[in-house]
Image 1: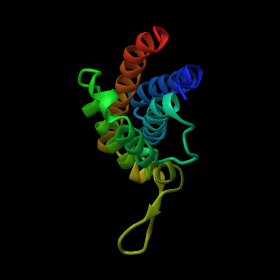
Image 2 (image 1 turned 45 degrees about the horizontal axis):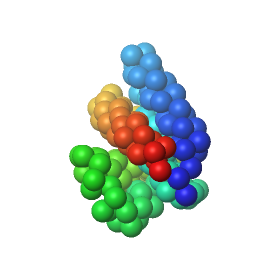
Image 3 (image 1 turned 90 degrees about the horizontal axis):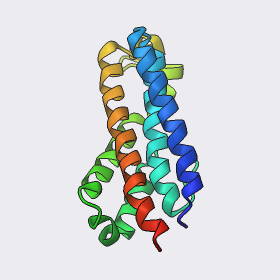
Length: 154
């Protein structure tokens, strides 16, 4: 597919989500931090996928990203340490995906009671997902910077 404009759009949105997550972390708004960090991870994964094929309509692009990686493993192995970082991006996308709903609606606890999103999204959760968002965005950005010069030369 080699759709550079789709990659750029998703990467810009991922960067915007990351900046929002970082700003809200500084404000100690854990819920909004988690929401934006999750979105950054999702969009970062979809930016990589979009280079090769149309991303699926899902909040968990990990399965599709893994499929893309496996189908193009030889091509991706030639790109320094990118392959291992793409696997980590898929793992982060899978971990963060449920937070799309949980950070908005909350979720049921083991005892059956309902835990509101504002209680689920603790400082620790926000810090963890924000770290994953930073790593995910950097992986997608470096993938884009590495692959684009190669793509433009062909």
